[in-house]
Length: 257
Image (cartoon, rainbow, N blue to C red):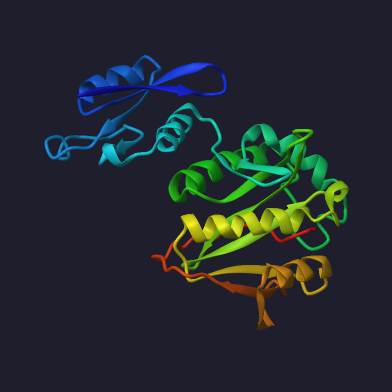
């Protein structure tokens, strides 16, 4: 079985191939085609080593699922969501230079960890983040773009944390105190309710970061007692669903809004 699906990639039309013939799939991949396996009862015991993706119950996939699979195979970022003024998408290595511009403002790192001093190290970190966070969990911290200008104005999203998810957000100074933090984080929380099963969302902030504390209060978070080893307060927002533990430790992305 071979399925050819026409994909609008943003760079013109392209084709996503799905097949249950693993030999044919390997030949497609060797030619640079975007292709993935269809998992069936007949082939599930074959050797899938080196094959990037396998899908099952293909009849239940939505058009967006095919687009996202294609973009994974092509190394393109997923488009996550839009708000009235912003777009959120996955980070890429090409965003690193713009992030250094944002982090050059000393107020950004007053309450949060800085980027690596070596840009190449940050680029390697970004590549690993895409592989071990986006590709494994399907979510993470995303780039925030202003719709009208297309400029990267920050980043925000949720990461797995000890069986729950943790909200992090950063809005660059020119866009602060204009409601962007609330707009973006509200949309992210709705995304979590819709797409990610979890009991609650956490967010850790420095008690001196009054802007972020105020935003969390506005979003409906409640503060837990005490601070952690990094002197950060933990705030929580209950969610309706539950999820299996997803242990993942990463660098702290606290808010600057």
